[in-house]
Image (cartoon, rainbow, N blue to C red; front, side, top):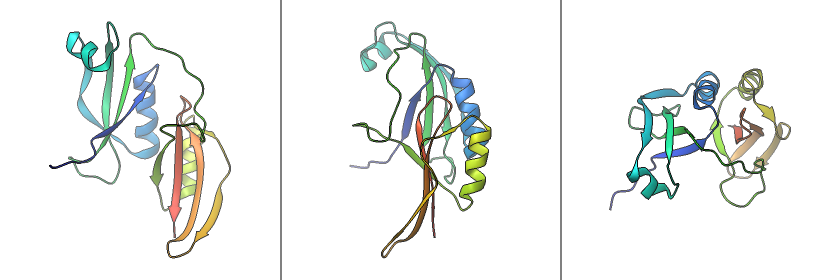
Length: 149
């Protein structure tokens, strides 16, 4: 059996704006076509009645054309949930590695991200120095920025 990671999905109220954030800050690349999907097949798979979604896949930085993507979609009908927090059970965050963490943090904040915590460092034996911070994208989804040296 051959298994490989495919994508991570983010649901948003405005897929074009959130795609713009990930393109501008993390150099994600759109992978056409733009999705506009609906029908019984989608309702069956998602369990969402009258499911209709739009959005785009974005290739993650550091990968070739067959690498994993962020799938950023918006449903026609949305359900509001509580704000994501780092210690909530379930999926917590996505992480981007960088050699210029302060520069990336400044760019993210300029493009609408917010700090969740503060920049922190910890030396981990046999691994190295980790510098990291949790931020949130404009929708409140948590992102870890990290540097290993």
